[in-house]
Image (tube, rainbow, N blue to C red):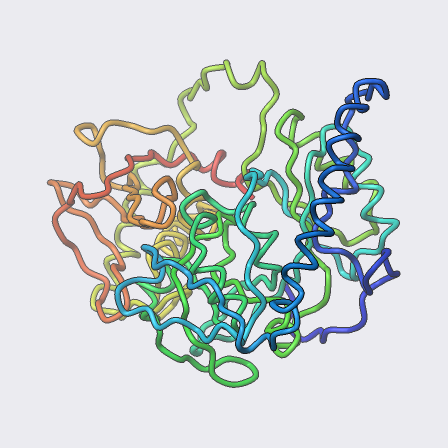
Amino acid sequence: MDNDRRAHAGPAEFVHGSGIRQDLSFLVKSPRRRDTFKLVPFIVVALVAVLTADVLLLVQSGERLRPAATRPQPTPKPSLMAQHQQQQRPAETAEPVAPLKKLHKPHLFVLTRKPFTNELLQKVAKLRGVRALELADAASITLDGKRVQTLAVNPSTFRAYTPKVTASSDALWQNVAAGDVAVSFVLGNDGGLSLHRKVAGPAGPLRIGAYATTGFGAVDAVVSKDVGRTLGLPHDNALIVSAPDVDSEALRKKILRALPKGTQVAPVNPVLPQPQQKVVQNWPAGSFMTADQITVALKAAASKLGRPYVWGAEGPDTFDCSGLVQWAFAQAGVRMPRVTHQQWVTGPQVPLSQAQPGDLIFWRLDPTNPGYISHVAIYWGDGKMIQAPRTGDVIKISPVHTRGFAGVVRVSPIAAAKVR
């Protein structure tokens, strides 16, 4: 993602507002037919409601005329992501975030070179199986000296596309709306960005308001659209697609055909064709690393013992956990994907009791998204592993622990090369 592009005016207007409406649910039409006669009782109820509302408006007119600053505002409740030290943002600094309604599981993440127009949005919305869409601004920015993939979003609507624990936190999204940055648990915990600390950003200091895993792979920070504009993020260049009932790969190809050249479409929670979901993967001889490759990878990792952990670092002098794996295996000619949740699918899972040197061990340590793979180490043998632990620590060999243990993967170079 290119953070050198600067924000610019959005495309054509929708009714009652400039730019593209953030809530794109109106684009996706329901296939259900309506029976006009069945609507009669609802019309009667609606007329009664309108008359009642007129009376309420008269009664409440004094309240409506009160200045916004003196009107009582709801106070966000603390959450696991905005913990005990939480300092509530002043209510006047942001509009209240809308309550969470229905969750939408994201399946594809679309990135374009230019902002989405109404015409392009309509093309995606009309594709079979598309249930919901959400616009965002996406770029890589420098945060506390680290390159961080960042989304600028509308907190009221984007929250519905995040994992349930993240989506349910009113305090988290109110803080984002007020100007804070929410960072992933991995970036915050392993990268040393503690809650409520102010860190250097592209346009001045930003406050770490919450730990909030978005569920979008390498995306590690979320800000509001207003903050995104001050940071210079490109406008409306990202689209989140929810399509739970169609093959994600087939839909991906259709989106690429419908949108301009240069568009990228990445699976988030891919839906597989039904037959593939029932097939048991066979791993014939030759699928895995040779003894020589394993030896080279282990020696390469060991050559970095004592080097410091740096979040996002890929070597050759500093590493994070998945960066060390990627670099060490590359020395053995094995092309590994970059982040932990991608490395998790680079081969079959084996029991910990059957782990062999060169296997990868994974953990789920993120309380904001318990299913997320957040840490990886290389099995050394004899119950030990070599790992890059976290900020403030160094690459070292240590005993394998099972707190938050997710599983062991035996790497297949063929499978690893296919992971996006």
